[in-house]
Amino acid sequence: MGQFIENLQYKIKTSSGSILLASYRVFVGFVIGLTISLVGQIMIGYGTFSFLLVIVSMTVAFYKVTRAWKWAHILVFSLVCVLLVMLLRMYILIAPGA
Image (tube, rainbow, N blue to C red; front, side, top):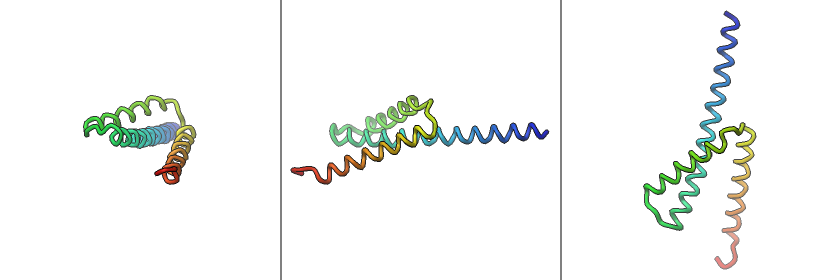
C-alpha cells in the first residue's frame, strides 16, 4: 500500500509539472503571436479573422518547436525576448528623426 501511495504522489508531481510547463509554453506562444499579429495589423491592416489566425498559428508553431524544451530553456528564451523588446523600445524612443 505504501508503494502505491508513493507511486501516486510521483505521478501527480510529474503530471502537474508537465501541465504547468505546457500552459507556460502556450502563454509564451500566445504573447509572441499577439505581438506579431499586432505588428502585422498595423503594417498591413488586416481584419479580425486574420488577426486571430496569426495568434493561433504562432501559438501552435511555438508549442511544436518547444516540445522538447525544459523549464530552463523556455525561461532563457523568455528572458532573451524581453531583452530584445526592451532594446526595440529604447530604439523607438531615441530614434533619430522621429
